[in-house]
Image 1 (cartoon, rainbow, N blue to C red):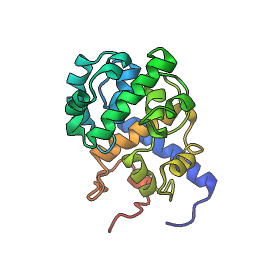
Image 2 (cartoon, helix red, strand yellow):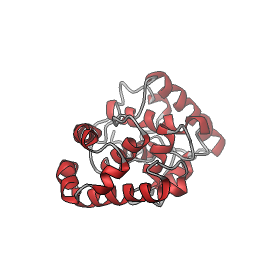
Image 3 (tube, rainbow, N blue to C red):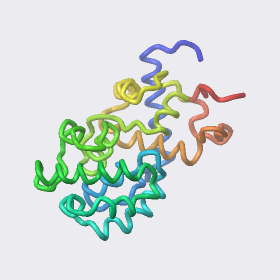
Length: 218
């Protein structure tokens, strides 16, 4: 890819955003939740697991445990059994219980609305905090960088980084803050529906004219 000026990259990014918004007008978080707490728990469980599997697990989980206090008081082995199929179930169960115990002790059982407070909770990294803030509260303090966002932002030539935090820092100046939450959804939807890791549908891609196809074999 020829060297691109910052202004040119910004202009191309805006065209990518426009194309994605037209292609996926209904893009949204595909984790099922009805409260900030449920979204927080579902996002913690989604680490290295598909949203589809998480939604199957949380359908029963959220019927059994309805509050942070419920999770904090439950036998750990019981939570482990319910989240086993999401992978890494022991560490996830420990994090869920520790996270919910902290919510009860420090926030009256409510999910806090700041990055620092969320990031301090067990099992909550910057990505999870961004998911909760952006989707549950409509607060955009950053861009969610999951595997799809990481992969597509590099394939589109918007960043060369491999570290999630550095990728987020590279994307934030390119995307209007009002679109930070949706931008992640647009890339995730595009990654799942068009731009697969191994066999992307470049011929039918809505971003074909804007994408340098970094890393895609001819």
